[in-house]
Length: 354
Ligand code: DAH
Image (cartoon, rainbow, N blue to C red; front, top):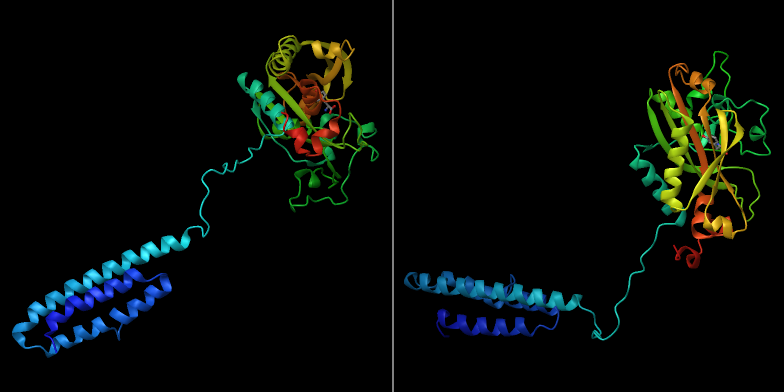
């Protein structure tokens, strides 16, 4: 038998050859076992080291260790190559194929219009406020000075809920409002005006808010109505606020959103939470093209003293205005859309155009 030291190199070469020839990871593991596993041939050689005469041991030990290091490095490298190979596609790649394009989504036109309106109001110092869609009669009507016999409160016009507690289990403060412990029926808010009360209850003046949000009415869907739609409410409270401020603000925002040729006019109207109250009519080239002189677009007015009293503001000190308008109406004007239902159908062919 050749000396131990002379067997190292040929064994190593044979092991290396087998590692490098392994066609896949399973074969490589097998080769590893055969050579450097517990019962492996190279391992057996290492075990013989003990039988050598003392003076031969250092040289043989050194050579064996070097070979082992080399084998393990080769094993790791081959394993890396085979792992990479296993992760690559089995079929060849055709680099001449066109790439797969990701379809980019878009914001819904109602969202785009809402964001534009909000952006305009932000420029003049308004902030966005929010309130619940499941509201109670106090915030939706009573606190806004809307009497019990007002048609908006009729079950024919409004969605009432059977429960007095909100679905999330949270009891509204007004559920337990009143010394008599009377509660206020819950409903889906019919307008965003309820948020005026919620904000004023929570903070002292001055106030400059806008409230975009979803509202609900018991309407049948047609080209201009939908039981769910969107409004933006505005509220400004400070000392010495005038109708002039209201008109200037509304004009500024409408021009930003719908173009410089926009004209607006205020027409006397009635809302229970404002006095005096107005409806805002609007016109531009598009309205003329529709064969009309003016389009009614929003309600507004100076905040009623009783509303201030309901939230604990002194009406002798504070003044303010409020307005509310429908976002769909603005979007329809802006894009020339003639049927409100298109907004809710989620037909991609429609949505892609904005
Ligand atoms: N809440 C009214 C509606 O839904 C709109 C409105 C009118 C809001 C006058 C106001 C206002 O804040 O002052 O038709």
